[in-house]
Length: 164
Length: 381
Image (cartoon, rainbow over all chains, first blue to last red; front, side, top):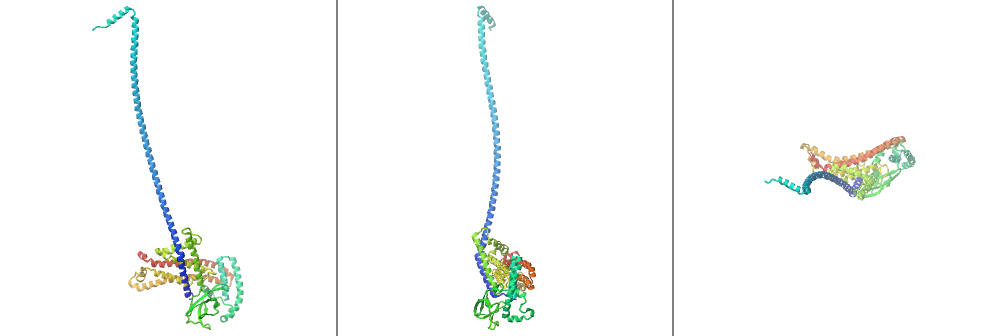
């Protein structure tokens, strides 16, 4: 029975001791401790959040990079294709040009050759005519050295000439 | 009397050794204690005979003559109950101050003046101590029952309380200092030991029960948790400054449960009172329900008080009973046989020390939480 009868002295002292403890710890221990714990948790939370944001940013950056890379690749392919086309065009054009130029030159050359040929022919003809005349003169001179022959010739020629 | 002292020294050395768990020393120490106290027995036998002639004459049976029978019940109750002297070892004890309040005012003197209940102290009244109860007496030593003596003495439990309050302050101000110094940095030393427990109280005891009101009640819950735990463990230490049965004293547990009771009821929401006086039952059940609910207000903290008191006291009694076995049988063999058992029970008591602190705190949080969060509870229905 004695055990379950609270004594007034111990009631008083334990209430006093507990309230002093509650006051002192509440003011000087629990408050700073719980505040510090809260602050630490908040800072950890914040750090985790910012890490997540950074991770997301990095990811989007990566995506951007990939996108840019892809775009660049497409652009490059396009450029290469265009360049190829242009090259082909230029080549084709150059070929065409060269051909027509060549043809032109050949034609010109042919013309020139023709002209030269005609010229040469004409010159040859003239030359041949001159030579022929010269030769004929020489022959005639030889033949016509004596009078008789001149008369014969003139007669013959006169004979050939028909007066109509 | 002398055999009790003999027992006490054996008990203390045994308990000391339980904690050190060095079995080879068990025999040496207890043997040494046995021999010294048996010589003390002879000398104090004469004392007992002279001073307590009246007591001795009561024990007339031949085998009890000059040698008190070992009363296990009395011994254990003495250890479990409060005392005005703090027994250290053998015949050495600290005489704690006695503070008495009567209609004539305060009387303050040392408990040594009572000479272990043999003498009468004459202050504003004459006082006599009997079974740790102080009475006012007349010159012949007869109790004056009409004079009320209020005993505010610094008893063994009060002294232990003060020591534990001082110790707790020292520990937690050091911890707080750690936070002041390191801010949000990683904890160090004692700070890192106690931080998980503080977080445990907050996250596993307070927060699930109190919700958004957690911060308001954290100081009380943390204080009550560490106060109970610290005192429980202090009670398990068999030598100074431990050994007192503070949390196993109903006055202490009553103060704690009254605080929980007050906190619950002054902070209770309207719905809490509505739940008690206008319960959701048919009207004809009101005469039954309302008294039940009103009784319920008081049974919750009452159960808190009894639970802590009974658990801690039972633990002390259990360990003491096992220790007493060796003295009862006057056999070292029994002592050696019970020692492992005592170690085992003490280890369990260490767990109980934590468990009871946890239960008291979580139930306090639950009761307060039920009173302050009742609207959200109602919304569930």
